Image (tube, helix red, strand yellow):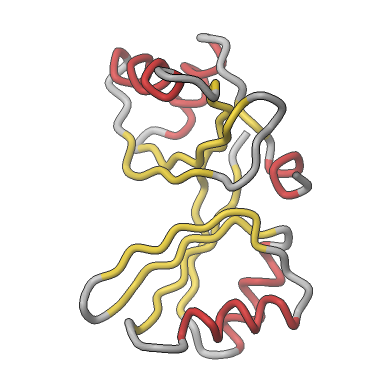
Amino acid sequence: MKVEQISIFIENKSGRLAEITRILGENGINIRALSLADTSDFGILRLIVNDVERANQVLKGKGFTVNKTEVVAVEVPDRPGGLGAILQTLDTESINVEYMYAFVEHCGGNAVIIFRFDETDKAIDVLKVNNFSVLSGERLYSM
């Protein structure tokens, strides 16, 4: 149950983020979740969108460097310690979290966190065996 994410490398200058969101909006692409990390010279914008192939195509067509990666969306109990329980389970199995960010909506009474792991398939198996809910891309894109 992997989810496709696009990563866009952008110059760290005024207007670049607005340009990307304008391009996506003009092409009917809905941003479902995002994360932005930057340095003084460039940024990496990570997006979960409702149409990965179209987003990839239109952004590359506008000269942006775009990569697709697989991430995992996990329902996290929206209570103190909810995220800690997931992270402890992963740590017990020596699975490294490379990065993570929150999804903007709730799924029932739970929050949704996007994870990038060093061992994605193993992480999914461990999460499922320990009764954590891993979301499909289709479900995430339509939330």
